[in-house]
Image 1 (tube, one colour):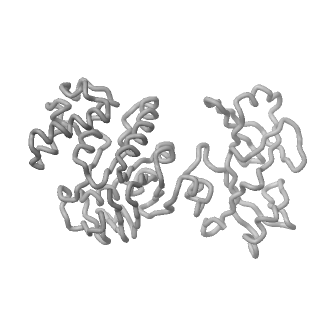
Image 2: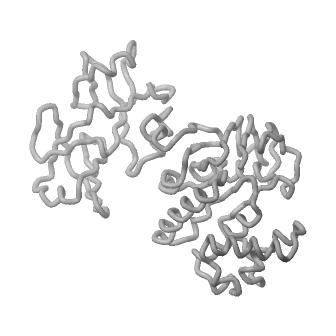
Image 3: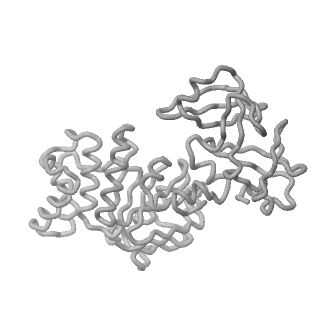
Length: 357
């Protein structure tokens, strides 16, 4: 499988709506890269430009070292799996998988061999004579993937392929997808707005917003070393807590609260009087009684999740989220709790540029 490279791609739609702006992306051979971002950020536009279904206004697209910017979609040797599966309702599963191979002129024997191979790979051999309307969502998804794999493309493009599935099936299909593409050593570019999908599937994540790449890196890099406040806020459930602090007499001060600035942060904050401090909910320690250097907050609400709970805390009109073990909430007897921050896990952002310091 080859690498894919996008260089300074710009796409402007009608009424000056920006699809992509100076967008750069490199996907290496056999890499699984997810383009992640909010709705309208340009994720699907990037995928369609790689496929040749959209024409960029500026920039170049390279597949396997070849500039394919002016090559039609059918000659780019890519496979596109859509959100809607795009199966032909009047054809059975065998015919749906074979249709692309017939168009390319493969012999009946070659078509039969490829269809049987991918059907066995995706465990749908017993479905080959059935029509799409008789299949479940997960089965239809497997058929769409089988059709893509049968083409033996250079690159797989997947546009939110799991979004139509229910939560349990979506989780199972995530596991199957990861194992599948690991087995066939595919180069994959995947689009989703779901960070759980991106984190669980990807070798790397390309996080974009308003048509611009905000950060490309491993899931750990984006989560633990975000370049800016947008990246830090987008990744993480529940999201990172952020608030403005003042630096005064060696302390971070916010409202009536203050705590000593750890020595490791001093080189980052020279000549700075105010900044945005971030702390992830799992890095807030919660106590039932006062502890040294802790500060008091009121419980607003408690969100009970599967194996943990999210506390929404009112700290002098500032709401903070903290994650605790599910058992902890049974020991709460009062409206007040005391919290401390894990001082090794603070994120400091420039107040004006919002870049990580």
